[in-house]
Image (cartoon, rainbow, N blue to C red; front, side):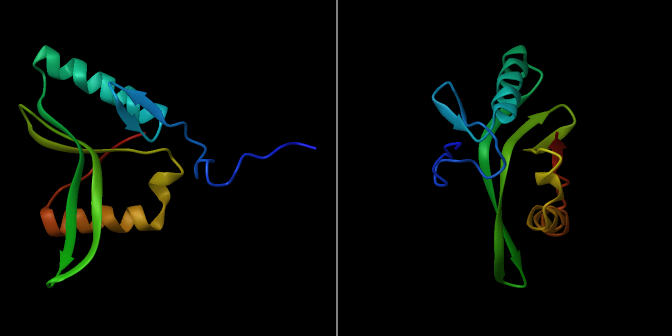
Length: 114
Protein backbone atom coordinates (compact mmCIF):
# COMPACT_ATOMS: atom_id res chain seq x y z
CA UNK A 1 0.00 0.00 0.00
CA UNK A 2 1.28 3.47 -0.92
CA UNK A 3 1.54 6.03 1.82
CA UNK A 4 -0.13 9.31 1.02
CA UNK A 5 1.16 12.63 2.22
CA UNK A 6 -0.97 14.48 4.66
CA UNK A 7 -3.51 16.50 2.68
CA UNK A 8 -2.56 19.62 4.66
CA UNK A 9 1.04 19.45 3.40
CA UNK A 10 0.34 18.45 -0.20
CA UNK A 11 0.21 21.32 -2.68
CA UNK A 12 -3.02 21.87 -4.59
CA UNK A 13 -1.41 21.90 -8.05
CA UNK A 14 1.62 19.70 -7.23
CA UNK A 15 3.92 22.70 -7.24
CA UNK A 16 7.03 22.65 -5.08
CA UNK A 17 7.49 25.64 -2.75
CA UNK A 18 11.00 27.06 -3.13
CA UNK A 19 13.00 29.53 -1.05
CA UNK A 20 15.31 32.07 -2.69
CA UNK A 21 17.10 34.76 -0.67
CA UNK A 22 14.92 33.93 2.32
CA UNK A 23 11.73 34.50 0.31
CA UNK A 24 9.27 31.61 -0.06
CA UNK A 25 7.79 31.18 -3.52
CA UNK A 26 4.82 28.96 -4.29
CA UNK A 27 6.65 27.14 -7.09
CA UNK A 28 10.04 26.48 -8.62
CA UNK A 29 8.87 28.32 -11.73
CA UNK A 30 8.07 31.47 -9.74
CA UNK A 31 11.44 31.28 -7.93
CA UNK A 32 13.25 30.94 -11.26
CA UNK A 33 11.50 34.00 -12.65
CA UNK A 34 12.45 35.94 -9.51
CA UNK A 35 16.12 35.04 -10.00
CA UNK A 36 15.92 36.24 -13.62
CA UNK A 37 14.21 39.49 -12.62
CA UNK A 38 16.91 40.14 -10.01
CA UNK A 39 19.57 39.71 -12.70
CA UNK A 40 17.70 42.10 -15.00
CA UNK A 41 17.50 44.61 -12.17
CA UNK A 42 21.24 44.31 -11.43
CA UNK A 43 21.94 44.83 -15.15
CA UNK A 44 19.80 47.98 -15.10
CA UNK A 45 17.22 46.62 -17.55
CA UNK A 46 14.37 46.94 -15.01
CA UNK A 47 13.80 48.82 -11.75
CA UNK A 48 11.32 49.06 -8.89
CA UNK A 49 10.92 45.28 -8.64
CA UNK A 50 8.29 44.42 -6.03
CA UNK A 51 6.72 41.13 -5.04
CA UNK A 52 3.17 40.16 -4.06
CA UNK A 53 1.59 43.52 -4.93
CA UNK A 54 -2.06 43.67 -3.87
CA UNK A 55 -4.73 45.30 -6.03
CA UNK A 56 -8.20 45.67 -4.46
CA UNK A 57 -10.90 44.93 -7.02
CA UNK A 58 -13.71 47.36 -6.23
CA UNK A 59 -16.79 47.81 -8.41
CA UNK A 60 -19.22 50.66 -7.64
CA UNK A 61 -17.86 50.95 -4.13
CA UNK A 62 -18.12 47.21 -3.39
CA UNK A 63 -14.94 45.22 -2.87
CA UNK A 64 -15.29 42.10 -5.00
CA UNK A 65 -11.87 40.54 -4.43
CA UNK A 66 -8.16 41.25 -4.25
CA UNK A 67 -5.72 40.36 -6.99
CA UNK A 68 -2.16 39.64 -5.86
CA UNK A 69 0.46 40.02 -8.60
CA UNK A 70 3.55 37.85 -8.32
CA UNK A 71 5.84 40.63 -9.55
CA UNK A 72 5.57 44.28 -10.57
CA UNK A 73 8.45 46.18 -12.13
CA UNK A 74 9.22 49.09 -14.45
CA UNK A 75 11.35 49.25 -17.54
CA UNK A 76 11.73 51.71 -20.41
CA UNK A 77 8.30 50.70 -21.78
CA UNK A 78 6.41 51.23 -18.51
CA UNK A 79 5.00 49.18 -15.64
CA UNK A 80 4.63 45.41 -15.92
CA UNK A 81 2.32 43.31 -13.76
CA UNK A 82 3.41 39.68 -13.90
CA UNK A 83 1.69 36.48 -12.84
CA UNK A 84 3.55 33.18 -13.07
CA UNK A 85 1.08 30.50 -14.05
CA UNK A 86 0.97 26.92 -15.18
CA UNK A 87 -1.29 26.16 -18.14
CA UNK A 88 -3.79 24.64 -15.69
CA UNK A 89 -3.95 27.59 -13.27
CA UNK A 90 -4.15 30.10 -16.12
CA UNK A 91 -7.50 28.58 -17.06
CA UNK A 92 -9.11 28.75 -13.61
CA UNK A 93 -12.36 30.77 -13.66
CA UNK A 94 -11.49 32.87 -10.59
CA UNK A 95 -8.14 33.90 -12.06
CA UNK A 96 -9.70 34.71 -15.44
CA UNK A 97 -12.34 36.88 -13.74
CA UNK A 98 -9.70 38.74 -11.71
CA UNK A 99 -7.65 39.28 -14.87
CA UNK A 100 -10.69 40.86 -16.58
CA UNK A 101 -11.41 43.01 -13.51
CA UNK A 102 -7.80 44.26 -13.48
CA UNK A 103 -8.18 45.36 -17.11
CA UNK A 104 -11.57 46.98 -16.49
CA UNK A 105 -10.75 48.75 -13.21
CA UNK A 106 -7.07 49.65 -13.59
CA UNK A 107 -6.48 49.34 -17.33
CA UNK A 108 -3.77 46.78 -16.51
CA UNK A 109 -3.23 43.76 -18.71
CA UNK A 110 -1.60 41.05 -16.61
CA UNK A 111 1.38 39.43 -18.29
CA UNK A 112 1.34 35.68 -17.77
CA UNK A 113 4.61 33.85 -17.63
CA UNK A 114 3.90 30.19 -18.29
